[in-house]
Image (cartoon, rainbow, N blue to C red; front, top):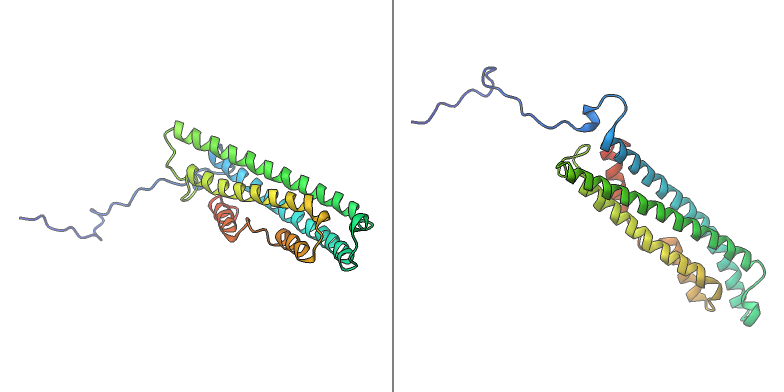
Length: 207
């Protein structure tokens, strides 16, 4: 004979589901420990990407200056020393400085990635590797997202340095426009990275 089913609305039988509270709500006032470290690291990553965007736009202005000078030379069918019109070297030096700063940003991203890897190892040592640090993401998921972002920008900066090293020597309009387009469109930095970044910002309470 089966047991009678209790009334789910009865106060004597109702038992609330117990869930692990997120550190962001469990801690009052200033965050501490892993949540604080993760939140600060995500903010730093966001600031680095903002710095990259600023440098990318500045570099685009310089690329356009170089393109204008080079196309004028190409249209005049100039060759030899005339392939390097007046003012071109100054622009190339500016572009070199931009690329050096972009490389510095990527190195900072790599440092952030290494910090997240250290957090992941610490969580595993403490046998808390699968727990959510804020709402749904554990340390492994942060590492995966930051790694994808770092690797994309690391590849993109190599493309930009290639452009910087070759754009002054381009001798055809089509090649010139290709270099310009490659800088502008950043083929390795796609919308998926924006999704990762926005997800992390929301997870850590920045959004």
